[in-house]
Structures are given as structure tokens and as C-alpha cells.
Image (cartoon, rainbow, N blue to C red):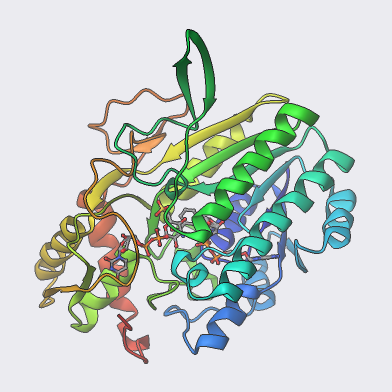
Length: 385
Ligand code: NAD
Ligand code: USQ
């Protein structure tokens, strides 16, 4: 299959490109290397020593004999994207090419405008390129659980049946996200839904929880294939940060009461979710939504798990509560709603796609901590709270 991976130089995009290339698919990457620039601007960096995209692609060719083609360019540039789509004629597009940091989007007007422009314009350009050149192509888009916010009802997968004044309809689930980044993903979802309804495109929106972990089967083959792994306060996600903090002896930075809940999944499960979605595409005109995470924890529960797992590996782990730098609900019944396609085996939610998860408490967390432990020689600039 011809697969276009937008954002293929990123944390999730690079291991995704490797996975599909390893399976023998024809893979083309688009990335404008913005993520690397954002770290340069803030003097932060990936803990894993990632090479340039060209070096990583060379390493993959040497190791696997497979070729990945990369185009360096911006999906905000509609003509560039049309050219790539028109020439490659992808059968599947996996779209990760977005600004991915909620706290970054909340720093200032300029950061908010940058985040929303980047994400909404890039996705709109993609929808027009697909309509023009490959209307039957399956778009797999990374959405996010945070699009839903923290309502006081169960979160459904994308849609909810509503009865109002005696009539019923199935409508998009109401969304009240907690950051301007998450709002950009809501706008994307609406635009993609529109393109499916109106133009007959096909798309799967994967609302994933917070991803953690360092390795996939392919990145583990050779250090030169590593994906990025960040632990700074803007781009490092909670569990990845806690793993690094445990290893270097920094207190785990629990924001506020720590009672805010999130759904979590291992990087290996992100790849499995994406593979499942790609191998069973949406129908023409269909906009599918899947909520994806293996388990749900409060941030404090998560810190306690890391503390126990770290202790078992010989690390002395402490937990500290910090004034929450984010404006977010801390006491709410749900965040993840019902676990989706790849989940801990005890969860009983029926789903159209099913997979084997790596639960945090089983193999996910200890493996992730051990992987992080191997990297501790690289922690050079501390963990910013
Ligand atoms: P990332 O920043 O590592 O990856 C995004 C990649 O896209 C980067 O390489 C960046 O350079 C590129 N990019 C950004 N804007 C671009 C543009 N305009 N043109 C071309 N390339 C561009 O982030 P990630 O953690 O891999 O997240 C990827 C996607 O998955 C994002 O859409 C994010 O919202 C979503 N997501 C991430 C997580 C998570 O926990 N990491 C969870 C749920 C959803
Ligand atoms: N948190 C802490 N301490 C920390 C870091 C975070 O307590 O050191 C808390 C935050 O306050 C928040 C929760 O942990 O309540 C999650 O924060 P996060 O930084 O791990 O994740 P978030 O900002 O929500 O964003 C990440 C990814 C984003 C993705 C999202 C999935 O960066 O790309 O969309 O997870 S979700 O949260 O389900 O929407």
C-alpha cells in the first residue's frame, strides 16, 4: 500500500513510518522539522540522541533494506502538499503533522495563533488535496481524548444519541477542551467530518490518550532508529516525565491535587491502533471516531505507580505536589470515558476494532522505566517544573 505519513519526523510519526515500511508498504514522509526548531528556540532537547531525518532514513535502509522517501515541507503550504499528494497518490494518509503541545498553545497570543493556524490550516489543505487527487484515500488522523474535556457524563466515541423536544438524532459528542491546542483538534475533527459528509471522503479520527514509552519493535533494532523522547515542561508528557524524574532522582512533579484523570497508552499500542485502523478502513463518506487508551489513572495514581515500579528497580523516588501551572479541572468523574480498541484485558467495552494492549501496570511501565534508565547518561539540563 502507498502510505503517506505527515509529521513522520516526530515522536509518533517516525516509529509509524518504520512500522509500515517494515511491513513492506511504500512509505513517504512529509515533515517541516518544526518540532526540532521549537526545541532549539527553547533550548530543550530529546533525551534520545536522534539523528537528522536523512541519517535515520539511511540507517533504516542499511538495517532493513527498505526505502523511505522524505519531503521536507510545510503542510500549511497547500501547493506543496497538493504536489506531494498528486505525485505519490497515497492510498492511506496518516496525519500527525501538527503542533502537539497544550501548554505551548497557552503561553501567549502568538503561541495560540501559531498552534491553531498550523493545525487547522494544515488539515484543511490536506482535505482539499485529497478531494482533488485521491478522494478514495483513507485519512487516519490523530485526534486526542482531550477534545472532549472533562464532562460529568460518560464520554462516547465521537457521537451521542440525543432526544430533544420529542425528536432523536445522533450528533457529534459535545466538546469542551481545556487548551487552545486541544481546541485546534476539535476544529480539525469538524472539518474532517464535513469533508466526509459533503465530499464523500473517508476518515478515521483516533482520539488517543497521553502516549508514553521510548521504544517500538523497530526503533529497538538500533540506536540510530530512536524516536525522540522529551521531558521538558512543554513537550514532555506526564508519564514520560515521571519516568525520567524517577531515574534522575527529581521529585515527581504532580500538578495541583493530582486528582485529574487521563487515559494512557504505550507507544507500541499507538502503532497497533494505527495499524488496525489502516487495515480496516472507513467506508467512503464515513467519518469514524475511536477513543484509544489502555487504562485511566489520576495523575497522583500514576506518580504512585512510577514510585513503586522505580523502587523495585532500585531508584529512590519521591512525589511532590506543585501549584498547577495549568487551568484545568482536577476533580471530575471521567476523562477517558470508555477505553477503546487497545485496552487492558479486564475492560469490557465492545469495540469494532480490537487489539492486545500493554497495560501500564504490567509490561508498559517497568519496560518504559528500564528504557529510560538506559538513557540517564543523557539528562543534561534538568527537569523544569
Ligand atoms: P511531534 O511534535 O513529535 O510530531 C509532529 C511532527 O509533525 C513533528 O515532527 C513536526 O515537525 C511535524 N509538523 C508539525 N507541524 C507541521 C507542518 N505544518 N508541516 C509539516 N510538518 C509539521 O508530536 P507527537 O507527540 O508525535 O504527536 C503527533 C500527533 O499525535 C499530534 O497531532 C498530536 O496532537 C497527536 N497526539 C499525540 C499524543 C501524545 O501523547 N504524544 C497523544 C494523542 C494525540
Ligand atoms: N501533569 C502533571 N505533571 C507534569 C506534567 C503533566 O501533573 O509534570 C498533568 C497535567 O496537569 C495534566 C496531565 O498531567 O493534567 C496530562 O498532561 P500531559 O502534559 O501529559 O498531556 P497533555 O498536555 O494533555 O497533552 C498530551 C500530548 C498531546 C495529546 C494529549 C492527549 O502532549 O499531544 O493530545 O496528551 S490527551 O491528554 O488525552 O488529550
